[in-house]
Length: 459
Image (cartoon, rainbow, N blue to C red):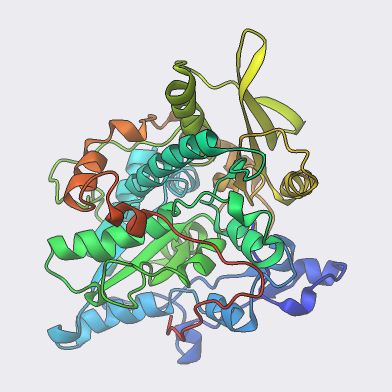
């Protein structure tokens, strides 16, 4: 699911032409009159981002005209410029290139190239390093932080909730398409219910530009950070990412490329590739096993928060979380019951139609849930429009089914079990309840009509 770039489409009925319309961004190679291909020592952009109007989550004031231009420029242009400059210019102008890959992107590469997910990660890492990338990270550790902070916030909200000042339901904030819609269109009374924990992409930006930069004795501005993600909304999210503890005005993410854009580069490249293991923020030599969180096609905020809340609030140990489909397969319910009483009622709402129903009930005050995991994409993050798409912009259902099986086979690890995360809380953030935690891992939300950061960034 992706936000529309044009306010002109606001409240219009989509025609067949509009459904097939797209925003094309000229590649650097095209701009320079060059062939769109790789040659040894030179890198040119191959894949242009196309955002279809049928991808829109909402078409009323979600994206300003200026932001629309900036998102359309979120392509590989600067990525290749940095690669080329690193080869040609004096070393004082070189930048360290770091790429962070979302866990929902790896099954796409595995399915597309008929590899195991481990081999796919090595092939992807090897390809990026053959271009000149210095570090390739997995963003799972950033999702660990986001989930852990969300768990703590839900328990706090549950204990503070009352009819006069309702703190529930808590709505997840990891999906940038949903958050932008809530901020720009819905406003109050929805935004107070958004979890304040930052998204994995936002936290990864801080980890790379603050923690990792200091470990490497680098200024944040000397690092060019790229995110590989399954959806286009991550490009929009990057426009508003500041790293609070890094140098003033430093962006956590300099460029977002979709999995599909990277795959096209890989298919058309003639650069020789040697597989390589993913890097870690800690400089570990040993390759770490790939892992995921407990979600069928996403980071599994519902399952992790549900288990944590059941134990913390009611001293109930929950093993496997049982989902019950209600309206459709993308609206599911999970409950914790004891002696006939419902103690916790959670829901997962994926896709705009289900989001509309959630918002309508919330506004009417007839909302029975304590927590909702909200994602703009039907089917979750694996079904992001930046991957597993056919040439005409439709979902490649066969490839998506393979991806689901691959993702399900990746071992699940609880965020609490990560020793690296616990070490980072102490080393990077001065403890789990310090002011630095609030600054680095939490955010605040604006309402409709409020000004946004619109600095002119050269993407």
